[in-house]
Image (cartoon, rainbow over all chains, first blue to last red; front, side, top):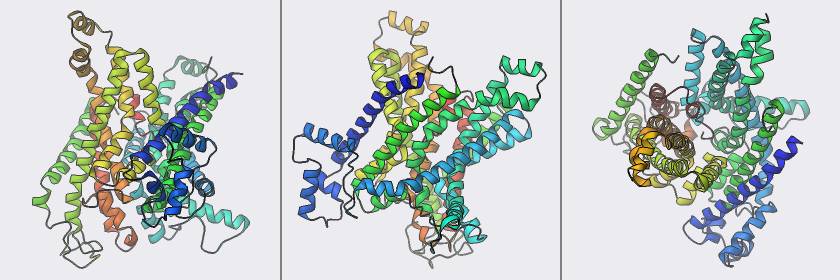
Length: 322
Length: 277
């Protein structure tokens, strides 16, 4: 019941947010200099009159403004994101083809970042003030300051060009493999891009789990548990972790959608065939329908991720939503 | 970690390095050995005697490029952060001071901007406004202001009922005077700490945009050098590694400085990187 109530309060807000993002998309097309139909068609100058006319009627650009807005939002609601001028394919189809690759990369990177980050953060909190704490804090600080594309290039230079351990580009080898061999191949290709992306986000989880662990360690119930004679490990597992991980769940939920949007740079560096790369290629060709489509889909994912986070938090922490 | 001694240490190292980089940026035309755009050597010359840090694909001096690149990074980092601060402080101050409907609208507005995938939004803005100095600054400012607004709002909410504000009100001061002269100066210290971290985020965002080829093509920047040398990065490691090191050291020194300045207990500082890459 609690979850149902949460969903009922989430839905209208989510729909409102999505409508606002649609409106923003619409405004962005309008903001671009020149005829909006020509903007959507791309700045190649090669778009013929028939295609421009098609866009005009597709987007209802020949009608009054309020009708245009309603028309545009109606199309978004049907997940009709228009047609890519370059490939002449529906934008929705282009995005759904590429989405699994992006999700594979970002979810792997996020899980690695959370796993390593919280382990380091908790270790850091337990040795508060000691050399390990300082070392981990400095490492997090270094990770924080590195430009992500640069990390990617340096890792490629070291592990791919120098040592030859991992492939530098793409998601699968030139010669396609089948079954398990294919999975191993993809996993092998995934290592460097996922590592790069996770290094970028690691620092957040180190700091977050360190501070929340420190906070929980000071609480009375932890002292009680220690007084009962539980070992350090038992106290950590039974009492500290569950409480200390709550902020991590919130942060992960906040980040997942943004991570997908931020994958543009990583996917460009590693030629990873996801939606970030799709957006970048569209950018080079001024294929605005595709960029706007990717933008909208990523925003939808942020909204959905917020819901999932909320549900997870309610399941983990019975105090929320009472 | 947070003893006053180690904080001082961070302040000095961070501030000193940053001051040195700023000096290099200011004096760039005088201390750079060459014009960064001039084609003067063999292409892809490795670091050595003739060119200390080597040359790029067109035979341009990398050292001069790096020195001039410092200007773009710092300029864009500072201006876009100032713009973001201006938006964030305005929205946050109005929301926190007036409360009620103004607050609800402002909070919704801020939340909306936090839902949007920040980097993708920045790319879209730059692409649509056409790549250039102004569009990059506007784009970065538009994606980085929400944390400031939230912080300023909460500061204003606690400060607005304090005695000195009541006193100002009973003296007949207008809302504007109370906001700007009475509350704002008291709300500023945490804002300055967050603001300095924003400069670091802005520099990283600018470098990513330039790396993708979305910067002013007439300005040399560290991200641009790395991005434009990507086709040859296997042969010419110095063209990607060295500009990246410059970015890294600059951002690290800003973070050290901000850490030294800031209050470590401030949650906004800990989770600054919500979405910006």
